[in-house]
Image (tube, rainbow, N blue to C red; front, side, top):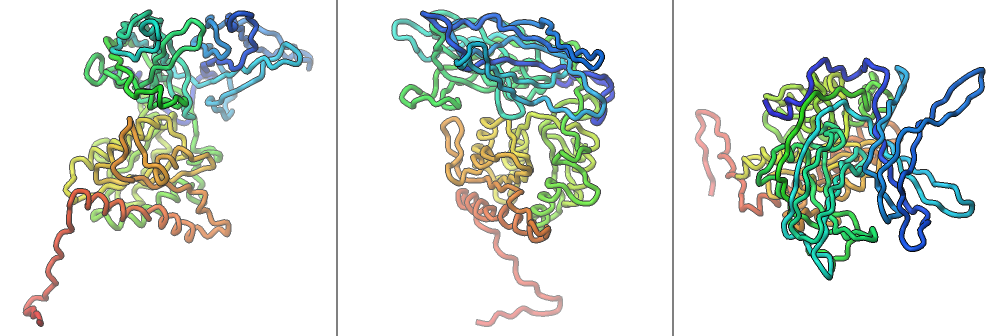
Length: 524
């Protein structure tokens, strides 16, 4: 059995219920634009205190008392600290309370009248019960030199991705002085701090050149995942450090793209038992986009039916593999980003669009919706099929229906760039009222999508927002017909572009049918 699967504790999994009255929440603290109190250097925001507020009701009079809970580490010479130390709290709730734990809260800091004292940022995420810890060690080779009078003083900062696409700091290595080839000390980190038990969650690692005044120079970054790290020392865990992937605005004159490499030297896990989380995104709640209304289809089902009923006519047997992504699966609550909707790993095929809809509705009763949202696994899943049949005999169309949140943008871009060389297209339908900027970027109509400095060979993605096709008159038949037309508009050109690029010509037309007993005459 796979080591990663071994790490999931097995006990009864119920996607709709939890049996204990509390869940643990991890609080991450950052500050921005703190008031500078030092005369000759930046403030050292040491010992910021955080308190758990308890409300005691007595005789209809509320008395608030503050209980000391803990404090952050000291970070020298910065007015914008990102604290690594976490605060884990028990959050108690009533049985029918509807909760989300993916919020970000910003509050201004006061204390000096008339002055802006900065902002404190609290990020919270519901924690799983994963008790495993990972120990790992890294080294680097030929990191880009940043110092004018000596070699770099490099250190690394690790971030885990969040469901909303942001990143939360989870570890900093020590600084290794005056070297371009550092070997950092091994460190141990809880698996839930690194990925919260989701082995495919993106882990971003930034490499910096330490500066005494706190204005550290950015060298570059790379991304990985717990699943990749768990392979241990191998060719898969040697990472190019590149400044082209970073969202920060770095002048091109200061970026050489390849800034050296980082290698995983060792990786081990001390396993105890893992987790069962509580419901998140319950499809039985009317606020969920997956809400199963007994009187009408939800947006996911409507989009699937509208597009599927057109495209299914181009498939001879009308048997379609249907995958879900972003859920915990029974029996143990394992997180998956490419699971069969019908529950059959060996045969994920569904009979027509009606079969897919039936599998979709059934899966909502058996799995627990869970973030973050990763696209790359399903894109790569289809790409593996397409890579095996490149002679023009088959062409694959992946339909993704999503609320627009994406947590593995860089990996998805890479998967699309690789898929552009294969006989495949991707249709994305966005449901809900979210901003779909990331989906528009993946569409690539305005700017051809690229990854690691490599442009996609051709445009294979078409995105449309579902809300643009909701007919206010209630005529969903016309609305869905317009949706299907626009969604499928680019497929013929994408299909032809692949065939032309490979020099593949259509098969010759079969001879005309001649009924038995008749002779076919050709008149000249």
